Image 1 (cartoon, helix red, strand yellow):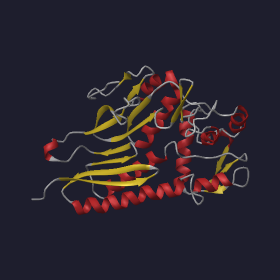
Image 2 (image 1 turned 90 degrees about the vertical axis):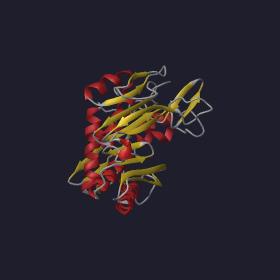
Image 3 (image 1 turned 180 degrees about the horizontal axis):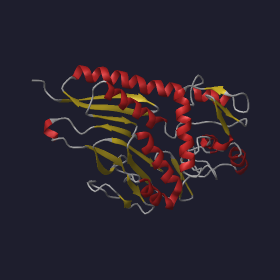
Image 4 (image 1 turned 90 degrees about the horizontal axis):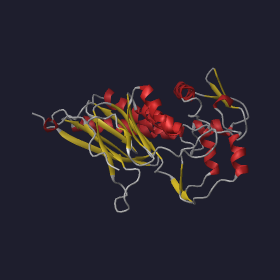
Length: 315
């Protein structure tokens, strides 16, 4: 009789510490599946990273204002998903807004120059991108396309699909906090329980920089969190984070964090980011999407967990 066990694989990717955890009886199968899934994550990183000169994103950006760039079916599908998010969010989720990061230095904590911001805003606008017959063109010089709004989440979904195709039925894929869960725990002593997922505290006490806000039970699907605590600086008592409104170029300033559980990680991450961008209207918008979420309000209190079995919610 084969013994059930948990096997965990850790690896760096997409500027994050990533992991895959599986419950099963066939360790050899789990190791083979993990190897292929990790290779898939790195393939996506190589193909879509804006930091690599040979990525498709860099080629599109380098041709801004020039001729169209040929793209494959996968890239076309991701751009269409971005188009759907742009429409769903009334223009708040904009894959051309990454250029605005040039105005902000979150390491030095310096405020943007108004003239620089105005110049960059002229290059933002999904409607300024042309798509036709597997071709894409950024119409203005200096425009940029950035898949970072859901690239890591897409990789988590693809890795989970690889595991499932290999016959893995109990797994947790974690790419820097963006998660995809395949089935409940498989260990007999876990009694078919859901995976318990830790949500990072957006305002942890100084002595606990990685404190947990809550434990959420997840049996299947994607869970992603968007917040104002990963890249930010303080200036004159105000927090400035890396999530930028494409209409103004300025950071969001309402929710501390929003965690969303959806059918897949790509959707969960996009919905969480849109809710952050929508500010006070974000919660009602999430409710209209009929997804479970945990939103932390400006006063640090959970506005609505929508996870009736969440444990340890405290701020």
